[in-house]
Each structure stands twice: as structure tokens, then as C-alpha cells.
Image 1 (cartoon, rainbow, N blue to C red):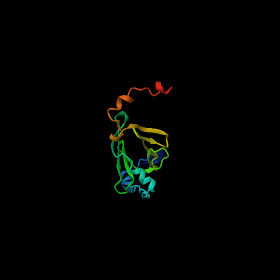
Image 2: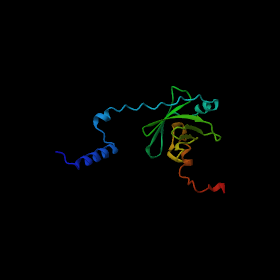
Image 3: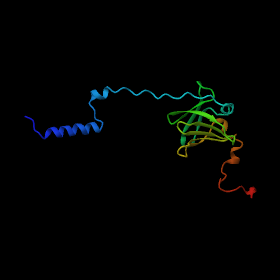
Length: 163
């Protein structure tokens, strides 16, 4: 003998379980795995981009707060770079600048690596924020003889002879 009010309650519980994503194991195991995303082929670089690529400092770079960025040339496509930061990898292409700075971009992820004479930084261009700053490649370090001249100078006050 069936109790008439149990049927609607059972149907309601099954419907709620379905809406919350609770599927029987047999139904869940029949799902096909999603294919890995296919990356678009990398475009050929312009001569200006290739020229900028030649100035990129490659290797490990120590950054602020004991963080590390590694920039390595992409073997499959000369002129491109693979940037490693916090366990993730980004494919970066050199972009022209008007300032002489080296600029690498990953337009898909909105990241920009900027390298100037004494440091480099990684920015999230979409959010307009720095992800890491004060990254220094060994070739960007000042010679020890010049360090005392620059250390300890307040950045907010002008030098006495500049007045």
C-alpha cells in the first residue's frame, strides 16, 4: 500500500537534487571530458618587434616581497617569450614603445611586462594594477661602486643642488 502524499514529496526531492547538480553516479560518469582549449597560432612578428625581442632580459628575476619571475625565449616561435609567475605561464610578444622601454604583452590574459634600465614589472592591464614590481635581472643591478650614491636618497625631496 502506497501513501498518496509521499509520491509528490519524493518527486520534489528528486527535482531539488537535480537542480542542485546531484546526479546519480552512473549519469555523471557518462559525461564526455571537455576538450583542451586550442590556442590560436602565434602570428609572425614585425621587424620592430624582433628588434625589441633582442633586448629582453631572460632568466630568473628576483622581485619585491621575495617573488620571482622567469622569462624564457619560446623555442617554437622565435621572438616570443614564456613568462612564469606564481605557478602560471604566459606567452608574451614584444610590442613597440615610444620610450625605449621593452614591453612584452599577453593580450589574451591582459598582462604586460615592462622592462626599463634598472627594473622590470608585471602589470594586469585590464585591472590597471601591478602584479609584481621591483624585478631585477642581474644585468639591471647597479655596480657596487654606484650603490652608495643612490641608496638613502629620499625620493620625495629634490636634491640640494637642483634648487
